[in-house]
Length: 263
Image 1 (cartoon, rainbow, N blue to C red):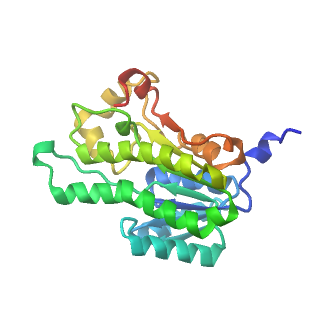
Image 2 (image 1 turned 60 degrees about the vertical axis):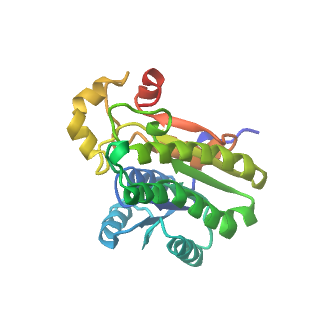
Image 3 (image 1 turned 90 degrees about the vertical axis):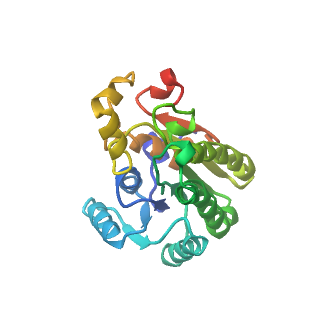
């Protein structure tokens, strides 16, 4: 017997942990999961931003909590997972969204910048997936992991000088596929979203340098992403509607990767 569509997308009773959840794409995804019924735990470095984000979600009737932590540090990751398990008893959905970027030509790229970007953009995905998997998903034989990659991880780039960012997002793509293969036996799906250009604090410099209108013109849909464009995709991967989808990378980019190979 088939399941009603409203039930397939219903997350009532589930707990979602969202890293980088205090603003931008992370907050957009948290809002979608919360509106579908999930309790949401937001994680980022700044308590003030988290308080504001949690208040925004609470005003929409969403059960939102927060923990301030640095996702690049193993001890902080474990603290977040332990505290979430203590407060909410389970973690059904992990959104690995925390990220950073740094622009510089490859020949002059600072090693400290490389380490910062790689530690947050790929090492933290591993740390959170491992900790959440061991604490909740593997013992319960269920879970949804959604990594935020980028179209920058689908191809190289000539114009944008961000070698660590592009490399980290390419790693996120293969991390997603590899973990999906390994953890399918536990009933855990692992997928990735690959956003194109969305206005955000992280993309502000690129949008200003190249021009938002020019970047939008390069997309088949002639637009940038907005405050709703990741909601349907993240809900598909997080819910029972996506239970037979794993190891997949979904570009949400207005068609840029279809015609330009990723960026």
